[in-house]
Image 1 (cartoon, one colour):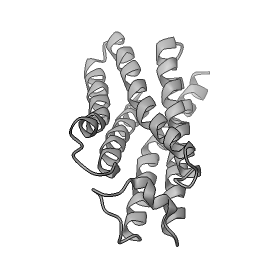
Image 2 (cartoon, rainbow, N blue to C red; image 1 turned 30 degrees about the vertical axis):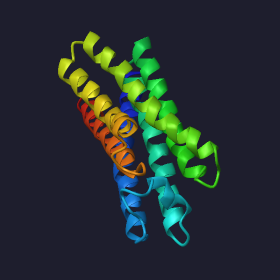
Image 3 (tube, rainbow, N blue to C red; image 1 turned 180 degrees about the vertical axis):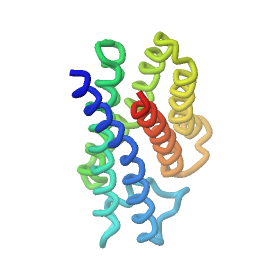
Image 4 (cartoon, helix red, strand yellow; image 1 turned 60 degrees about the horizontal axis):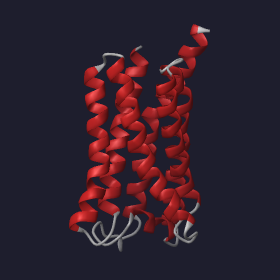
Length: 197
């Protein structure tokens, strides 16, 4: 049983390390293939409806990275937290966020309002899951990991709150990127931690 658990955890961790690489490679390739893209005036999802290779590349990248990070949640987080029901709850919320990420790649901006709902779901559920999991780390006396998890949650939420209060950019590509990068960093750090245990 311990051996099976270790295999599941390592599989999830490997998926977690690979997911951000896949996501950002495809995002940046899509941006490079679309000279009209502007960080201030566009949403990242605008790339998903561009003609030529841009749309398919962007959408595939989101779906593939979402699938990988879903494996991280199901095989990695669920296994890592064992029978801890709070940990399992946080893992389930994070898994739901990854399903929303996959749905963003499937339901692009042409599928309104579905695209809006799944996008909001991802950027809301991911920080909520981090706050839940931070509590688990606190209870387990992993204070540095707990602080890091809270910090990532704050960074993931802050660009959105600042946008609503100050409207510092006309569109959402910048807050999307900052939030996504923060969540990706957390996935990488926790994946490495899983591989070491």
